[in-house]
Amino acid sequence: MLKIEKSKKQVLTGLKNGKVDEIIKIAKKYKAQKSLGKFYDDVLKNAMYEVGYLWQQNKLDVGMEHICSNTAIKAIDKITEPYKKPSGAYRIVLCTPHGELHNISCSVYHLTYVPKPSLVNNSSCSDQTFLS
Image (cartoon, rainbow, N blue to C red; front, side, top):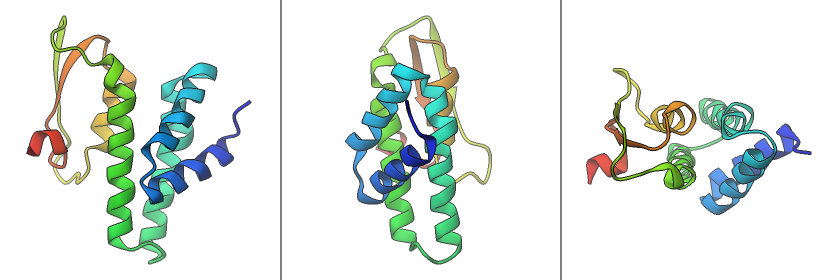
């Protein structure tokens, strides 16, 4: 049985160390026992809140916050890879609201709510595939 607090700590450690594969292992366990949506709600979202809290308290510098955010983005991208299809019945463009500085919410929305298979263009401001 998955323990949320333990999983959150493991994901937080993975985020800080750039260990995408460790985060994916936990996500796969959640997918098998619960769902990817539960992984996002129970674990990843709370780990990212902890990153924000630590940054706000000056216990995490801005560089480490960026490492955590980029690691989360890469993990979500790898998790959603099996669901991506070059052509599909749905073509969807995701973007962030004005003022949002990360594309994490778009990636999670893609992971959780977008019908599979779909061709998704994530055009949020910090999406690395959009910028390249």
